[in-house]
Structure formats: structure tokens, C-alpha cells
Image (cartoon, rainbow, N blue to C red; front, side, top):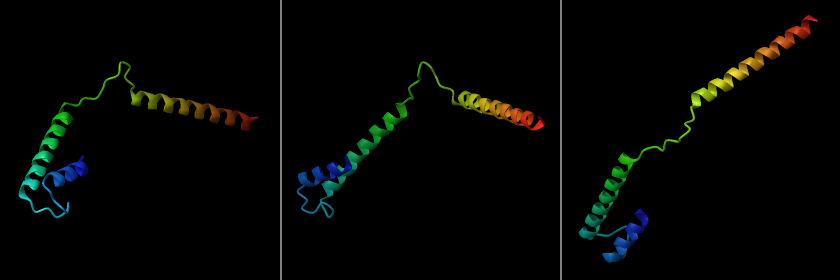
Length: 87
């Protein structure tokens, strides 16, 4: 957006060199348009809400379940190793 805005404004205000434009109205127009874009962005960001799914996924429960299964498998493996070494 910024690149296109810069090109259009330099064309409208007849700036030959885009980087070195001494036209005051060019810079004022650019600042006003950027402020408008910033305000619109801030308003949209303020009103943005995360979508809530019908089936919420609780990551903590998934991690707990996975870790619990891992611990049980490790315990079974250690019991089997102990049983095999005792024989």
C-alpha cells in the first residue's frame, strides 16, 4: 500500500524524483492518508475478536493425556525389563 501510495502521490503532484519531492502539499497529503490508514487499522484491530469454535480444543488436556500415556508406557516397559532380568 505504501509503495503504491508513494507512486500515485508523486504522479499527482508532478514530482520528478520520488525520493526528493519538495512539494509541501505532497508531504501533507501523504501524512494525512497514512494517518487515516493507521486509524482504520487501529479501529479494526480493536474490534477484532478471535473466532470461537464450537468444539474448543484444550491444549493442556491434550498434553496431559499424552504425557500420562507416555509415563504409563514407560512404567510398563520398566516392569517388563525388571521381570525379564529377574528370570
